[in-house]
Amino acid sequence: MSRDCHTCRHQELEAINMMLLAKRPLREVADKFELSVSSLHRHSKHLPDNLVMATRAKEVASADSVLSKIMEIDRRADEIFERAKEGNPGLALKALKELREVTSLYAKLTGELQSGTVHNTLVITPEWVSMRSLMLAALEPYPEARKALVAALGGFDIVQG
Ligand SMILES: [Zn+2]
Image (cartoon, rainbow, N blue to C red; front, side, top):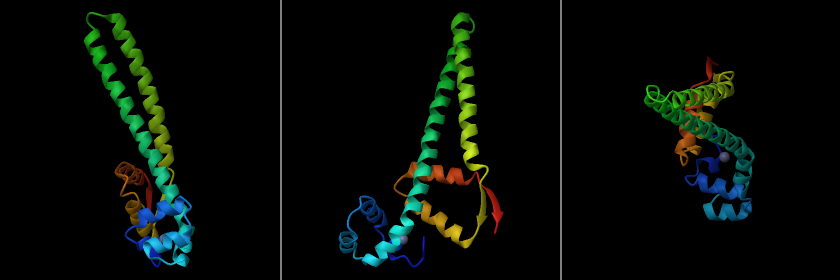
């Protein structure tokens, strides 16, 4: 965010971004939110970065929900195995195979999630701190994505800059 961007500081930033994304004429957006066309124009230049971040956070969020589904399957297969191992070896074996499958899927997915975050090195600068709060603010309406972003940021190697 640029500190001198009036649009970024507008309390209806979300609605403004939506209209800009919908390619509404700047004049119309400017009139509706009492902003200047030139401010909106400047704002629209740094808009895509924020949206890319939001999209990335959503991807992480959806990977997260895949992960929780896998863990649910894992839990159920485990239950079936526990119940079947005494009286029903055939079923127990099937449950074990399912567990093996789930485990490799889980390993693959967590590996992919980590490769997305671990190799990033984060240098903390005042710009980064304000960018971070901007991203978190931008994601306010999407609690799931926001949570995922916080989680993803936890995976950065942190370097004082
Ligand atoms: Zn702006």
